[in-house]
Length: 335
Image (tube, rainbow, N blue to C red; front, side, top):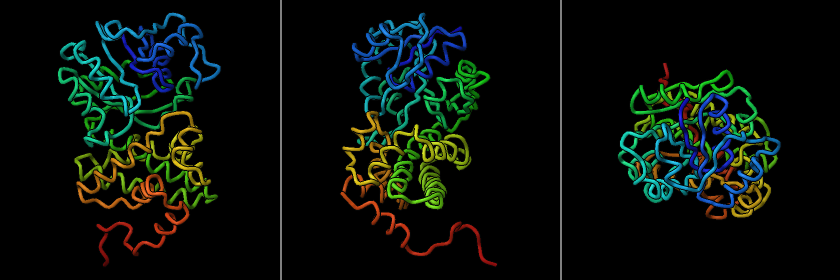
């Protein structure tokens, strides 16, 4: 049995807390919001996961030291916009070599760092790993079969974390490609916004298949240029996560995209979804990375224009369709 703290009281963090508890670990949930902790203590429920009772022996706290001291693993499960502030707040309490697993998805717009890089900058003494893949909180907390991947700089750390999470309903693979895992998990949210926009416009399966296929091409193009491995983008945190996020109504990014396609503004869509839409935050960072590494991302570019420049969504799709004709796979020569 391990002592684990989930940092963040969102639906994903709570789903992982229940999973770890069911695996026999002692679990503490920390939140910076006293009202959130009070809700958990009083109701043992999460408002975004109706019908699920949290274990009576799960600990809930706002106390930083209680959350960090003596814990075998800290799971960073806050929204990407709060990763740096949370890491900075807890940094002095983290012991040398203490393991931190980031399960959030996003790219910090100002620095263009992945979230694990942000954590490493704020808490240099920590052993930082990441976990990502096709995994909706609503399904994980119900024990529906899910497969995911953990990335770490050492195999020992990856195996240690995988052993804590692995169960008959939660299969965990391991990988040394931390950068590729994070880029796949972050950029797929932007493509999922595009898929939702297409749904909101009333387009069909052909359109969605095109967006998923060409979307993973864009993600892999940027990701490999930055140093990620092509195989990672063909796996769980690449095509796997992209499929589930583009296709499911559990996906907050797709739901926000649907509203935008129906004519709502980005701000109206985010308010309606009532959850953090990470793709909105990653979209602008993705374009800045594309400029930095001189990589073309036509789908992500059009998403940015719709989100931040007021471009009509139907016009954005038309411009994608009328781009210059190209060979699908440029490495394939003609005979």
